[in-house]
Image (cartoon, rainbow, N blue to C red; front, side):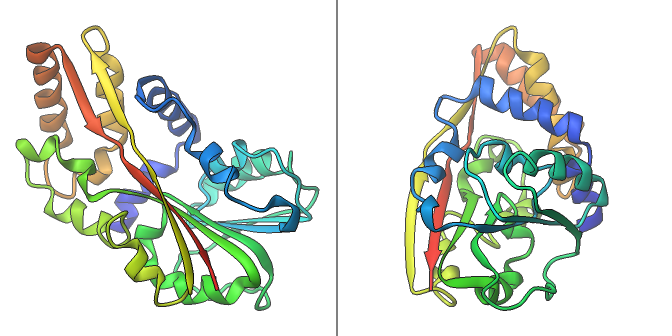
Length: 251
């Protein structure tokens, strides 16, 4: 199952295109990365590890410079675009193809900042290793979804398997999970909806197609796409929950 899901993250051009669709249809016009940036003491950050880094989405939103940036991802295809994204912020960029959770070959306390942006629900078992890698005064940032992200589709379909993935680390249980490894945890809600109106059926279809490997854990993605486009035609508007939560954790 996991290998099928990860296919969704292997096509950089498509992923970047979907990112633009999300931005164009977001009710919240503030970039979630800007919210994160305002909470991090950048004058103390010299080294960063991005776990589940993908193509470097988080790095594309940064303005700071680093002595070292390390990206870790299970997909080798994400290496070149990640390096391209990160090298504007550091002359020393590494990409490691690793199936997390795993022990990473770095000394304890190697990083001032560790980031998991929309990825920790795939490998919450990596938290002991994240705690080990983090400097004593470092910051761990996790951005994740709310359990309510599926609520509109759940009017028609049962996404029990997909919910199990999201619930491995979600807005609702994040504090309890992080509290096993970190003493100081800050939560920041990022309220948002994706709004699609008549004439924007193609964007809605492409967004659902992009989530196809995830949706397929429970139901035929084409059925979901047809149903949601019919709802758009009937109601004139479709709103999809995109509430997220940012966690900043310290030892």
